[in-house]
Image (tube, rainbow, N blue to C red):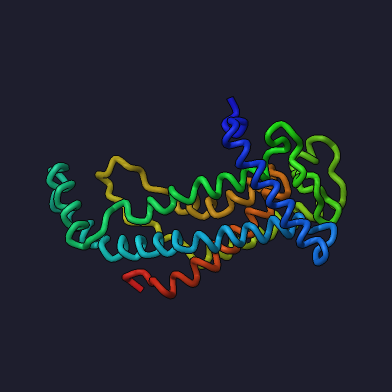
Amino acid sequence: MDFFAFPPVAALLDLTSSALMGLSALLSPLAGASSAAAAVLLITLLVRALLIPVGISQARAEQTRARLAPQLRELQKRFRSDPERLRRETMQLYRDERTSPFAGCLPVLLQAPIVGLLYAVFLHPVIAGHPNELLGQTLFGVPLGTSLFGSLASGTLDASIALVCGLLVVVIVAVGEVTRRLFRMPQPPHDPDSPIPAIPVGLLGVLQFVTAGIALFVPLAAGLYLLVTVVWTLVQRLVLRRLYPPASA
C-alpha cells in the first residue's frame, strides 16, 4: 500500500499542493508562466528558514563532539578491554558536560515530516485521486513534472529539457564541489584493532554529489527543491561555522 495514498496523508499532500498553486497565482504578475516554479523556490526557502533552529542545534552538537573527542579517545584507550566500564565512563563524561551523544538528533527527526511532506508533493503526479496540477506548470516551457532521465528513457528529450534540467544538475554538482572543498572531512585515525572498517576518503567526497544523482531522476519541481536545499545548506554551514567554530579551530 502506498503510504501517501492513506487518506490523512493524501489530504495533507492535496492541501500543500493547493497552497503552492495559490502562491503561484499570487506570483503570476511577477513571474508569469514560471510562477509555479517561483512558488516552489519560495516555499522551499521558507521551510529552510523555519528549520534554522535545527541547523543551530546540529552545529552546537558538532562543536561539542569535537571538543570531547580527545577525552573520548582517551577513555577508549583506557577501557578498551572493558566495554561496560567504557560505556559508563562515556555516559558520565556526557553528563558532566550537560550534553548527550544524541544531541542534535531529535531536531533532525522532527524536521523529517515537514521536509518529507513538501518533497512528496513534488514527486507525485497524482494526489488524492486527481492529477497534481503543480507538475503540469512549466519553467521556461519545461513541465515541472519532467525528469531528465525520464525524458531520455521515453525519447521525449529535447533541447529545452536538456538545457533546463541539465543546468540544474550542473549547478547542484558545482555546489557539491564547493561544499566538498570547504568542508573536507579528514580521514579519522583508524584503530587497527577496531572491528569497524575505515571509511575511504574518496567515498566521503562522493557523498557530496549524491543529490546531483537524485536530481537526474526526479521531476523538475523536486530538482528545484534540491537545488535550493543544497545552496541553503552550504550558506548556513558557512555562517554556523563562524558562529560555532570547531573546538580545534
